[in-house]
Amino acid sequence: MASALELRELVELLKSDNPRIIQPACEYFCGLSGTVDGLNFILSQESIFKQLMNFCSHENEQVLLLALKTITNCSQNENGTYFFIACDKEHFCTKSLLDSVHTRSEIVSLASIQLIENLTRIDSGARHVFIFIQENNLFENLFRLLLSNQPCYHDLSLVFGNICQVPAARKLFLQKDGEIFNKVLAFLSHENSSCRLGAANCVKNCCFETADHEWIIKDDSVIGAMLLPLAGPEELTEEENDCLPIDLQYLPSEKKRETINDVIITLVQALHKLCSTQKGRDAMRKWNVYVILRELDKATIEVLIGDDVEECDDYNALQVPPEVQQKLQQLTDAEVEVAHS
Image 1: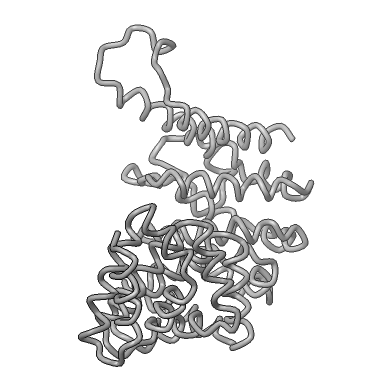
Image 2: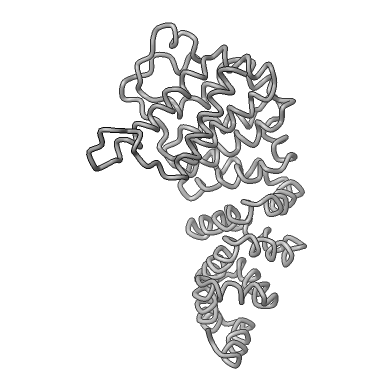
């Protein structure tokens, strides 16, 4: 890290109006934010941090991108998000970020969305950003950007999944019998993994609104969309197929199951949340959810066995990593709940 004198000189550079002078200082603090000590230093310097936040609307793209990268690094830490919120009480930086999403270049748009996604991972950050979105009627415009399916907007799915931690945000998705929520379901099968994960988080969080479960389970469309990524090419009996949601019956042999563990776990958690009411549990049984979870569980175990590079006569002797054991247990618990509750 630079000496105290050098730091004072760098801070003075940040106050310049000349991008050529500002940029080297921004480069230094961006590099500093990539280390633990450097990050902690930046989070102890409100004046430096606020100046970097101001640069998030700078006309010079290089200065702007360096500021975004620095604050993104800082916001990977919860303390960084709390510090951002404390420095952004009037939402001046949040406004800059959301403005950049649709008014600047694709690279700036993407970098701005990635910072917003970091900030909204924790509840307080999600509330901070959502308040500004709601007060300025930006929700529908942002959602239209996601629906445009342009690559630079794919990570907006993660942002929407995060802000659904906020009950008021969930209400927007679920109003009018889920007019917006139903559009999210299509992203569960999107080719982009960020779109799928964001959509899964959105669906899971919306399932916390038990008052809306009744219309969610009124037919097999929502349950079917949630189950489809979890289903594989396994051959089921005629009786098992006939009880599944229509979109899951007699799937082709080339059907591929979701490969991102976080998406799988999140969807299983969403299904489990629907089991919190009697009508939800009845619906799970009616549409044979157990069968899909059973095959998912089998496939997960087969992958574990398939990854073993050494000959093994006793599968009981295989050492399953603790993190995988935990995920398997979550799947099994949800499966048992659906089948026997």
